[in-house]
Amino acid sequence: MRNLLFLTFCSLSLLSYSQKKIKYETVFFEDKNYESPTIKINLTGALSEFDLIKTKVKVYNYGDKTIVVKPEECYFTTHQGNVFSRDKWIVIAPRDNESKVIDIKTDNIKTDSTTLHLNGMYICKTQEIYAAQAMLLPPEKEVKIGNFRLELDGFDRDGKEIMIRYKVRYVGDKIGMCVPKNITLKSPENGEYKNQKEKDKIHVFRKNEDMIIGFLYISDSKKDNTLHWNDAFSESIPEKIDNIAIDLNIDLIKTKDKN
Image (cartoon, rainbow, N blue to C red; front, side, top):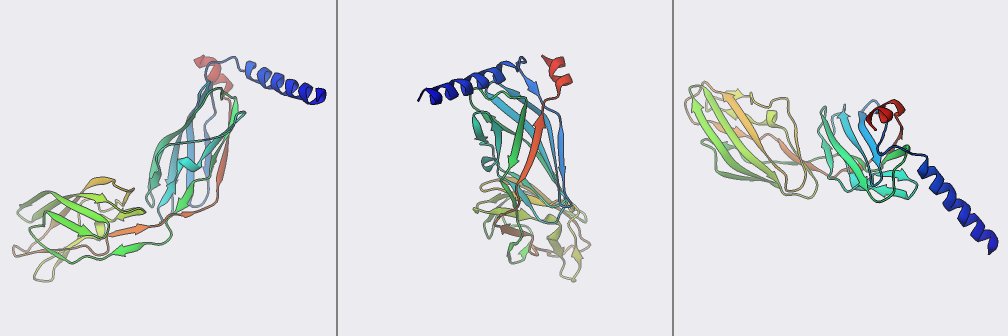
């Protein structure tokens, strides 16, 4: 019993000593990068204080599948144990990038080194495509395509230019995707016109997320035109991929300069 008490006292003393060694109010960490053939992750602005550890995470998606990072499955290591984040999902469309601050908050977690474990890494390998009937212009005020709800936000025709805007909301439980360039306009003369707006953009949606999506067409026909959705809307179930761990260490020069 005496030995157990002695070991406990020594452990507490060492823990207290290790915390006293950090004389800075805020510890700033070095920027770090992780890169593979399909993904790149930048960690910048990382810091640690008494009740906070945080870093800005920027994810570059080099592939043709949507990547999802679930921060609630990601954690920082601390002398208090592993502490998990509570931030919202990061959804990165193919060949795009997104950034977000991931943080944890609890008492007495200031440290001069930590590891960010990105255990919540997912990829949308397979897609369920939603087909929809062609729509005769002028556009309908409300359109339902699978788990997507479209509400007309604007329509105008100026000469050959036809402009359409829809507010698109995803109401499913997976990850929704809209590819505006897939949506074409056809004339009665069998002319087909590509969307000239957002033609290189892929929109991804979380549940109940919405955004304005625009369509612009140059049509020679003055007769009735039809909008063809062409498998532009789909949803996917994210599948878990390998975890990524990135070590963060104190940037002593920056820490001294800012304290």
